Length: 164
Image (cartoon, rainbow, N blue to C red; front, side, top):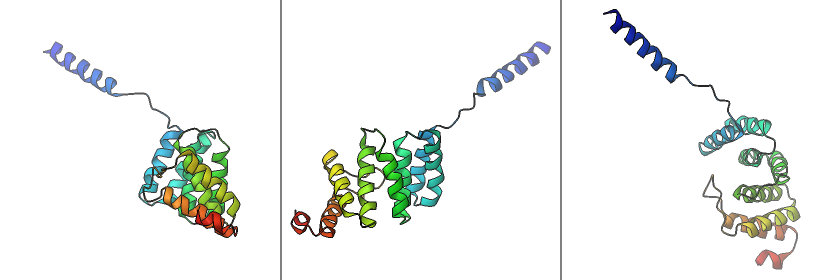
């Protein structure tokens, strides 16, 4: 009988220790991914600290700055949005995130009345990805960006370019 109890105790201990694992530290992509989840729920203010944590952990992680730019854009803070997009644009990124950054920068520059910069960034985004669709909101896509470029040309009184 003692052997049976001993085996049960050993088996139970083995299960407990096998179930334990090393605690993992969250990395930039983890914070940023959760930030995008909150953005999908339209919790823009709630997303900001997660994007900030991602940027703090890895200041070269473009999508953290991209997320900050979009979150502030959704909160109608074009100046803060543009600042974060500018930080992201200064980083080397060859993924679709780069197009999102350029598009976001074009939108924020239009909102700030900086038409020339809106044209430059909007055209760069469209050149990179002509049929661009924002990964985190399919209602924002290349037509919105084309309209931003056209509106910006209009703001510059370049009416022929606006029509094109």
